[in-house]
Image 1 (cartoon, rainbow, N blue to C red):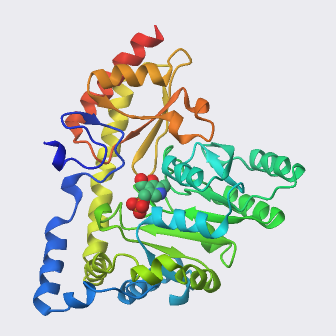
Image 2 (cartoon, protein in one colour; image 1 turned 45 degrees about the horizontal axis):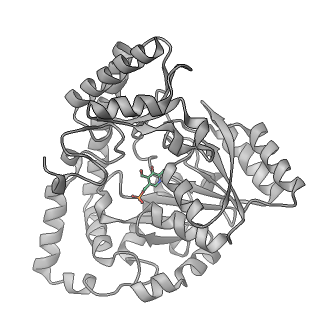
Length: 387
Ligand SMILES: Cc1ncc(COP(=O)(O)O)c(C=O)c1O
């Protein structure tokens, strides 16, 4: 491997257990190549090499509306969905359109590091409430809301990754979702549901989404093809009320840029409409389930007794709690000296100090022998440091 061929942030020759990327051998390279070559032959490509509609590729919109209605009975129509350049684009757009600097937003503790980064870019006040194995704890969220209200402040929205959360792998239960919806009605904030991983469920049944449970103006839901197709395509979608979609579509970014990534969107639309995406997702579930089971077994064998970890029912991530004597900064420095990279817990908290004894491992990217070697190194280091 040379540096040019490694994905974002991956050091050549290392064991990148931090990387929340799909493994290169899980990308449907041949299928995507076929779709692109066929568009080229048919000449339809010229249309997609030009600027596109502000709301996005209409065939992809129709495909997604039909699929979501069929799978989840959402009852949405094309006015409720727009194509975006990946979920990250949606998080940034929502922050830009719904907030002004100094506004408060609610997040989980821990929450997705790059969303926190975006909220900091927009100079928002991050207010976090803790999660447990069922998602955010409503009493903690309510305490935060009362505290904000006592300062005359109302949060603009609650940002949540409801399924197989990044970083913890935890899925919020239906009861917790309903409790959050109650609070959002009482305190008047929106819910931004970043639903990146729901297609990658390896066991159990899914809970209805926030959008399905509350819908309307209250919820903005984001989806992406990054985890089930290829992140380099930069294609996702946003579902919301027709009024909100109309407002988002009116942005200067989309007007001037001709919609989100028209060429990629056309490729994704063809891939989906041919049935290949559905088959690929089905196959991916088996592949990732194997990797998850392998990582969990390696942890069981290699970790000292004082380490705890989550057992995700889907997604990419396992979240570790370190013994009190082991600080994640020390562990990270020692691990990197041995070529092992994990995601420090500190990045996932509004107050980084809260993550001093946590770390995130990803089982999506690294081949299994490297995963095994990396987890062994980690176990040895923790055992040594914990004394
Ligand atoms: C919760 C969450 N949101 C968004 C993203 C990024 O998605 P996209 O590639 O669609 O921008 C990720 C990727 O790791 C994620 O875990």
